[in-house]
Image 1 (cartoon, rainbow, N blue to C red):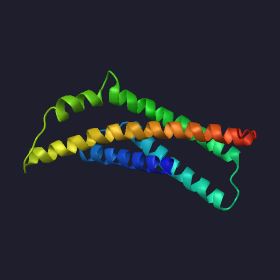
Image 2: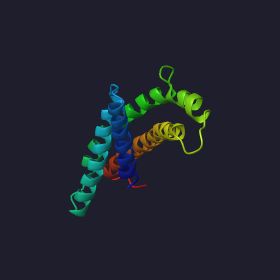
Image 3: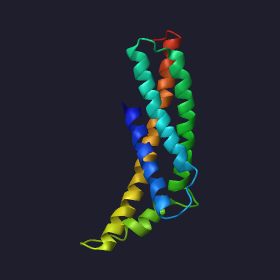
Image 4: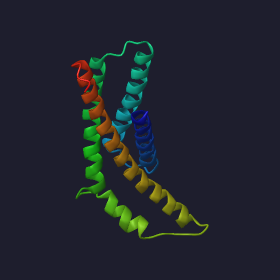
Length: 155
């Protein structure tokens, strides 16, 4: 359920990023739809695994292939998210620190609402990175466990 939750969270975050970009009439970077699709595939894959398991038709080969494909997709998304978040060009984390976290607003006014929205965007970037890392590790783990089951290595 960890992979299901992390996939759904990333799907929602990047879908919201796309909605914000559209509302601001800005271009949508390739990462946003890419991660929406990767999140949807992650959710679908877990539902598919649970369906096969309930019908007693779950085979290690299915999990190996699916986990490998999703591992590559999520690793690519993780690399691009880390470049956007911590890279030299377009460093989202530094911009958040300078323009959001160091400039707090308070009170019942429009500036506070704008600051809260900016803070939400910054927090979503960090959350997306964390859950992409979790999913990447879990898909690698699923691939290795399925490979061991396929080889009959249980110890």
